Every structure is written in C-alpha cells, then in structure tokens.
Image 1 (cartoon, rainbow, N blue to C red):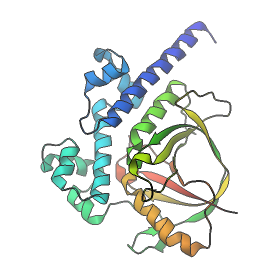
Image 2 (image 1 turned 135 degrees about the vertical axis):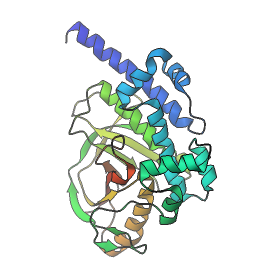
Image 3 (image 1 turned 120 degrees about the vertical axis):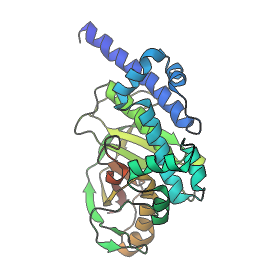
Image 4 (image 1 turned 90 degrees about the vertical axis):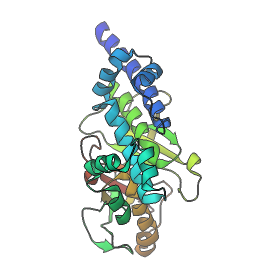
Length: 290
C-alpha cells in the first residue's frame, strides 16, 4: 500500500474513533443534548470544522441526528409510557406542544396524540394471521444462512441502540467496509420484562468479509445458520416490542415450534436516515430448533 494511502486510511480511522466518542456522548446526554462546541471538544476536533466532518461521516447534520434520536425516544414513550404529552414534548427538546406536534407529524405522518391513541402505526406488509389486537403478521419458517459480523455491545435500554449503530457505522465507514451488500443487524439477548433496563444486553452488528480485523470495543460476532421464524415489520422501531409480544404470546404457542438456544435478532432492511419512520422495514428472526 503506498504511503499516502496508509496515511489517509489511518487518518480516517482516527477520525471515526473520535466521532464515535462524540456519538456516545450525544446518546448518553439526550436529556440535555450537547451542542456543536461540546461535541467537538469530546471528539478533539476544532469546532470550526467539526460540523462538516460529522455531516460527511453521518450523512446528516448534528441537528438532524439529535432530532432523529429524540423523536425516536418520544415515539417509544408515546406507545409504552404514561408521561403526559407536554412532558414528552419537553424531553424531545420542544418548548410547547404545537412545535412538538408539527415536528412529530412531519416525521411520523400523524400527530403525537393520535399516535398514542392508535398504539403506533407500524404494520407488517403482508397480512395473514390476526392477533388479539387485530394486527396481522405473516410468519415464514426459513433457513437463515448465518452472518459474520463486527459488533458493538450496548448495555441498557434497547430503545437507546440508535447511537450505538451510528458509532459502528462510523467505524466501518472509515475502513471502507460498508457497501450495497452490507447488512445491519441487531441482536437482543435479554427479555425486557425480566431484566432491569440498565442491564439489558444487545449488540449492534454489521456484516463484514471473513478475515477482517477488528479492535476493541468492536468485536467479532457470528450469527449461526439456523432455522428461524421470520416476519417483516413495517413502521417505527419503537413499536417492535409489541410485535415481539405477539410472536411469543400468540404465534409461538400455536406453531408447535421450539426456540433454539440463540436470541432473536433483527435485520434492518432500509435506511432510517433517508426514509420516514412509517417506511422503515425490519426483518425479525426467532431462531428455532431443528
């Protein structure tokens, strides 16, 4: 490799590591999101240049990233929690309900109040088997071929995985590891109702070629080839927990199948940065015995 190429690759790697620190800082401080200068300081970049570095690496501005993460948290709170709308708006960074309502509707296509009343907007694209809520899921038994991945472990609420995936993407992008065939996968090890939120284990992962070297905190993760129940969920990630309740509570007992000794995982089929939440597609896999 020519020396100038070595220098360029090394610089890109260092930039990704520093950007990862800023992403982690943002994710850990959503209640009071740090601004440009604070993030630049964490990443050890000049604030005069940091915004361009962030935008080039992330494909969105710092404000866009912050807004996306806050609205995702707000969606989760609307379908899962009992916080008043005004408090959710405040936590999302809006001084009042009108501004929050406009921002949420622009992203999700529905007002926050209507979103809460409906319990979410996500639906699987193919409707076959109704559950007790009237939602339908088309589950297929497939053979998952396995996947060799680089992974970044997260300890904490599953809803906070967004910045972890962003950090992993920054690491992989700096190494030229992201292409059209790259798959982003989330592996969820614990049952949220049985394990405290602060101790939930999950892995943000993406597929990499065999032989790719990784370094801490990135690790290698092999998802084994397995039979699996699979369905595709269309809608915000905040609503996936309801789909899991249906999968385990309705489909599995009636299926005659037994889960294998590997956790559920999700394959994210399109880009949440370029599409609105109602268009997000997630393939959900439940590994099965046999």
